[in-house]
Amino acid sequence: MALRLRHRGPDGEGVWAQPGVALAHRRLAILDLSECAEQPMSFGSQVLTYNGEIYNHERLRTQLAGPWRSTGDTEVLVHLLQEQGSGCLQSLVGMFAFAAWDTRERKLLLVRDRLGMKPLYYQLLPDGIAFASELKALLVLGQPEIDRSAVRDFLFHGYIPAPKTIYRGIAKLPAGHMLTWQGGRVGIERYWSPSAAIVARSSDDTVQELDSLLRDVVPAHTLSDVPVGVFLSGGIDSALTAYYLDAPRTFTLGFDAGARSESDAARRAAEHLHTEHMEMTAPQADFAAALEQMPELFDEPFGDSAAWSNYLIAQFARREVKVALSGEGGDEIFCGYPRYWSRVGARSTFFNRSLARYLPPLSRLASSMQRRAYAGLPAYAAALGGSTARQIDHLLAPHWLEPQYDYLWFYRQHWREDLQPLAQLRWLDLNTDLAEGLLTKVDRTSMAHSLEVRPPLLDHRLVEFMLSVDPQVLVDQRRRRGKLLVRTLMEPRLPAGHLERRKSGFGLPVHRWLRRHPQLLREAVSRLMERGVLRRPVGTEFRRAWHLLVLDRWFAAFA
Image 1 (cartoon, rainbow, N blue to C red):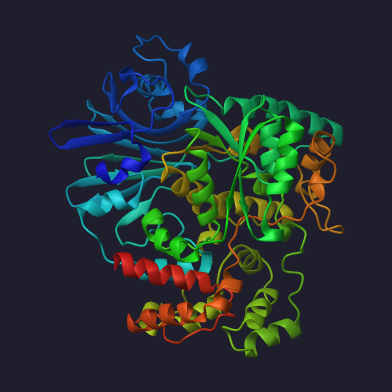
Image 2: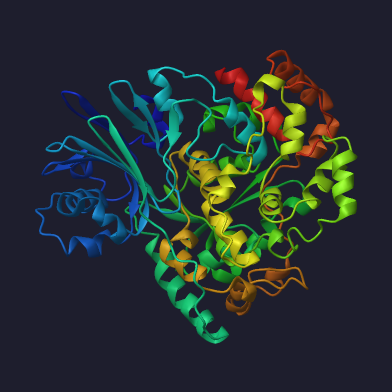
């Protein structure tokens, strides 16, 4: 199992074992590079194997008696667990997934960080439990049956939401949760439940508090004994991250695709912020290579085509640094997605609902009309998700379907009727797509190159503060723009016009490519029909054709 995760920790390996229990660790040495920080690490009755960083470990260390052998965060965490058990989780500032075995009580504790930056999978076995950072390690124990409901969920979301995985019997621990296992008894509970209550503040006070918080939070995420860099795009969030650091190294990925490349804007920001800047230009998006790599990266179907861009920038940065900061999370906490100003659900009219009902379900126009037909939670889900429920039911073979399947089950868990519309959407973003989509993409594509990526904008202290800010002051629906608070803060600190650029993102131009190579989709769909997964073909106009290409490649690699 540990060998399968060597890419996550090429700097060392360790195994601790006693009758009936074994813990393994792959080390990516970032804090305290000496042998004293190797894992699994034990203290008292606690044995720990841990992935991540505790940014406030030095302050926490001063509250503990020791004795100390290392200067890193792992030893602080194992001491905290010995003294406080799971009660120490509230004091941790960082990103982490860890397992702690209590040799006295013979009890296992599994924990995933508040926002889900680090992954944790587990499998209940007839005589115990197994766990790992990625699915590929658990598959050493055997490949379980495919969970057909997870295929439906993948087509609906573009990822498989926690606690499900593509396999029956293997689960993801949800973000902000902990699991205990003792003598075959399992308990799972959420340990972080932030408040969504709005706090009244003046505009000036809000900007000042945010500025003060960022001055503490962003530099804290550079804690490292190895070189650190920053991913710099042409957007606001990465420039904000770089601004709060002292002359950082910055890395930009550009494309030979004209309007899609953010290199020029990133270069101007780097010059303005006096960073040590490096650029890489990808001559052309290599879709074939991206599709081949996806199954190996994620071990289950994952449909965000921007994963390939993340993979390339991580590969580039890893030549120079071992840790990189990124601007992930800014759109979620600062309300930066177009859905925040597009009045989700307002276009549900009799005309749109009628078109959605009678147009061919898989056409591009039908996809648009089906989204316009919804109101309430279904409308929010449509703004976030992949294919519609009607399309999936029309596309999958009958034995892959389930009568009256609730495609909204994941979103329904986090739907807050007590919140106003923009706050509802922000809450959904933070509790659903963020961990299972965005942060999964960042973790796998970076750790494939043994690069640790840290998103300081998702520090839980910053998230809790932004949840207390009324999202109405962050969005101008008339001018169709968001992140007003950050714009006010950063406009005088960035090059003129930097904040006026259209958001382009790092997604690949999939539909343009498919129009040039339609046979690739035809062949993929044909294979899925032969496997009995799909019942009918689709054309290149199908809005989520990339998801079908990914599904086909996953079946070819794993089924």
